[in-house]
Image (cartoon, rainbow, N blue to C red; front, top):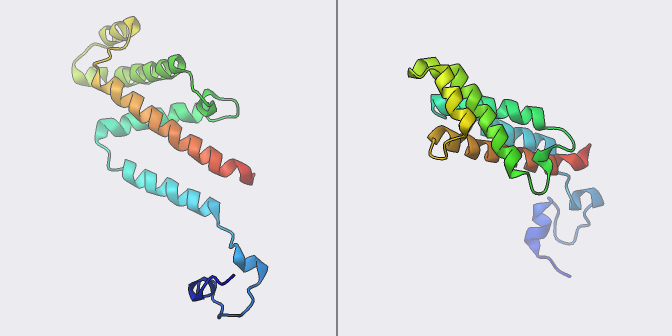
Length: 149
């Protein structure tokens, strides 16, 4: 079977020249690629607005707590109720840290959150999206890297 000249040029050989076996399937360095993906993601996250950066810090902290074998993060179908409870916890931390700056007393903010998160709350929606994205990113990394160690 003739693959053509470009097949042999791809590996630096000449037409008709035999190629060593180890060069036919060059090994990719997945760890370096993963580190580059992570650096690229962090660079783009630096461009987030101030409030979104604060939310991202809290989301990353929560995901760090969940990043272990058997966690709901790595389940095939993550539990929606647990997902929303994590989002509510992040929202409570966010409101407790910044309630004084917005002029809303922390007790009033906590009381409103204890009744249930407002589905029209833009911060709650942003937290849900950022948590889902961070979980997706970590799940993909887990699937790509777990076969190497």
